Image 1 (cartoon, rainbow, N blue to C red):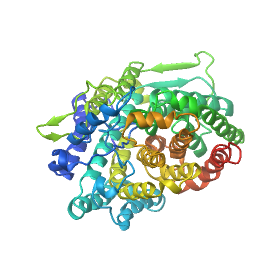
Image 2: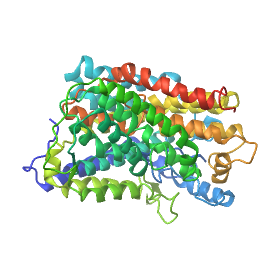
Image 3: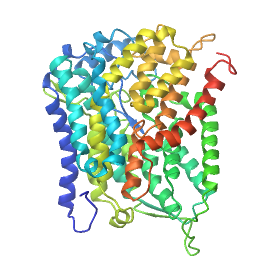
Image 4: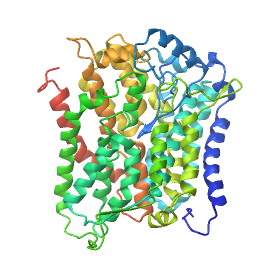
Length: 549
């Protein structure tokens, strides 16, 4: 049974549970990968470094790529312009600069190795529908077993450990960020003394979308999902959760590098911090308003009434304010990275480079400290359990491992065919793959391919700046805009497109809320609602029919 907060649990028990989660993740990774994968520089390629982040982000990975990156950064520093260094040591799912894939990650995997990933997606889609009891009790075993197939094939057949090293580093950063924000936000009980109506819901979704650019989509989703559900108690429907994912957990975070992991990757590579805002806001704002208008029309048809307004109370009440400090700590720690601040050390044990950094240590520490110090009333009112993060942790462990072959094959295709890909093709390809794969490595793979069209290298910060802010007469920036918009917006297409999507689903389910299945989400909502909206974006900005390319 999932752990449910109770006063009967001592702090010692809670501490041991949290620590065991973090330690188990680290030990599992160390057991899966040979030590040689982390040590000798000759093992690691001279690569460009893609990472999963964070979410929310800034779900970003840390200094995980190994000693070879130190040499690469030194070489880039000699070439680089001002701003910040290239993210050469950020491990990611693909880390390609557009060259021969064999030179970067060893031999390409066979196409059939994508099957474990497809099998896991199918099980995630069908398990809760057709064999719910069996799936609920055994999904960790399926995720681990399918992931193990891919890991074993890479290590013992292809004899290539680098992709699995990246997967482990990404996973640790992902789970550290999501778990820390989930636990910290769970200690905050935010009550809104308002009735759930189409107007109040639209305002809340818009505010949440804005705040996502300040505390990442993951932070905003964890903070607002519970009060949003309480606001609509008595009239809460599946579409409420879906539009929350569309707006707060995805599209909303499209204005700043803090908002969504792909944009943070771009920032680490050299994209100026405010470039996204100045080049995307006029796409972001109409998209947000259009989705809100669609939501308003749907919600207006819901004639059920929400919670009653308490005339004796104020508009908003907060229990557990001190946990906002932990959220701020997590967001600040996202930037504790050697590529942002040169004084941040890389972690080694002897010659072995560890698959996590200072950032992950801070975030895992917040998991423990935020829970132990949380207001017990807030936890109880939020009906806090560890089940949502447990489900996300196990399923994404399998996803991160099994998606590596697909990412590697896609990266190879993009690098070999970049010359024939138009800006519209980059938009649709980046978007389609961001919906079913992790949008952060997808972003960087296609960014590398797009820069290759202009003879530039994604691993050189000065060239990334030149690509984003080209000389007059060169339109390279529109490729970056298309890739950025697609990676962020299309992350809403499925539950696995972006980190907070599945977390929101898990939290809603743990609270007894009816949410769409994986297939239902895709067929009933994202395909008929998002695809037409994204098609309009393509027609206006990337088809060449209205805005001349």
